[in-house]
Figure 1 (cartoon, rainbow, N blue to C red):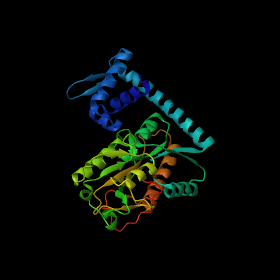
Figure 2: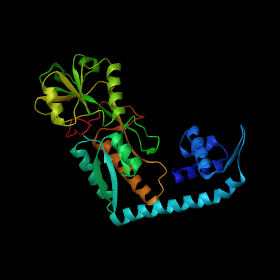
Figure 3: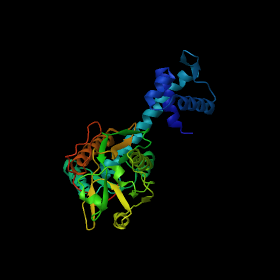
Figure 4: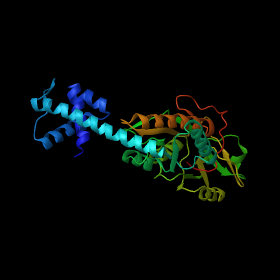
Length: 321
């Protein structure tokens, strides 16, 4: 049993004297909270609360335990704080995850901006998909990540949500290349090339669903991790690669979709309930810097605003995200 987690639940209910408010405070549903309280009572062999349909009250053993539980949680917070201070103070490293395919210029701009604004910290970047980043954030192997949505972010705080238009990489000698913009339905007879679903299952499925809603139901979907593999499939003439803006290269060109019906949603994310203010400030600085770089160099815009057609994103050096 995770004793610290169960004690946190106990203290929240004891202070709120209401399971619904305590669950909201903890960022969880009420049934799992009730289950944790029952497991804690079973483990300790005492009843902590008197429950009725209208009232929740601490029992005498519950009142006795409350002060000790608060003391334990305070000490745990100090341990986390000391550990984070030791790592950031002695090593000076912030561990951040990035999705594949942001492109060399975007990555370089992020590193340069972080060095300029956070000279006291070393930025350790790890390229990994959203699913892997979520696991690493939950396990404490990453301090902050850049995720593709939708994903299970219930245990994370999220930075500003950004939208990145997705277009089509097509053969330069195809009829599509002569157009300034395409409609998804124009590609009805083509196969599609996408980033691997394992990297970001929610974004992968959402993008294909949007294609189908707009008249493009690919005959086949190829998953390409490497740009050269995607390029080969496009040059073969039967497939188009769905990707944010990339540089035209020999034999292929990138074309946007009119009105931007296909977008990737991206935001920074970090574990909820950060215990240490030093690490929290470091994460906040990264989130601010990364969000700015993604807007300036990757053609991303706040999701609340429409993505203007006139925005010219700096091309990525890779095809996929």
